[in-house]
View 1: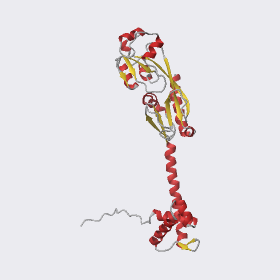
View 2 (view 1 turned 60 degrees about the vertical axis):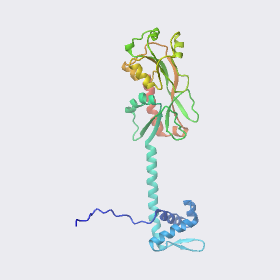
View 3 (view 1 turned 45 degrees about the vertical axis):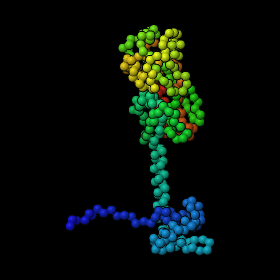
View 4 (view 1 turned 180 degrees about the vertical axis):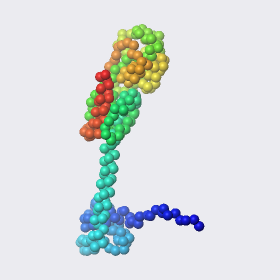
Length: 304
């Protein structure tokens, strides 16, 4: 026969946790009734759990008198050990919960804003041991319901139930590949127009509004490919498939790299991007650390 495995795990021989909790509460309060109120059970349930513990130990823990209970010697020996253990459990669990809350902040922002403005700025994010969680969504996240701690919201504001401050205002203009060689507004008659079905709040520009502002009549402002989001419209424009009315803040990487140009005006004003949070979250130092980074990343970049 082979040798027996010497690495046998020794199992703890402990009574049920419920019995220990019932005894500790009853011994601390010297009352089954008050222990039951604390544990949200009936006095009978507390008495039953204590008897289970006494049976497990093989000796009584209480002297049951007419109107009160008194600890036996065994009960007096057990109580401080249990109290110390439960106190340690409580402190450790509270530290773990607080540590998680202290380290993580969830920031929600529109998808393209996250990709174009937040992710490139992550290299400059310095907030000690704070964890930043980015939630990219074009849907409005319920901050009051705990969906996120902080949001970048697009729109005029104010936002009901939230504290907010403007970050940067969006501007809209014509963008196209330099390969199309657009130099005058009349050149638009010779290239396809690309359209974005805006899902933002407010009166966002489209070709009809831009042509009106430009005083350009006769342009087929409803014709051309349509896109459900900015990303694909910008990709099509970069590939030389036509000209688009785009959010210039979000098209900044392509414009700075020379992949797109804004060949002529007019430039149309859009709505601001705001920082928004619930009043309670706004006072949180973790949220303010993320807000400070955003102010520097967005407002500082816009000023460059």
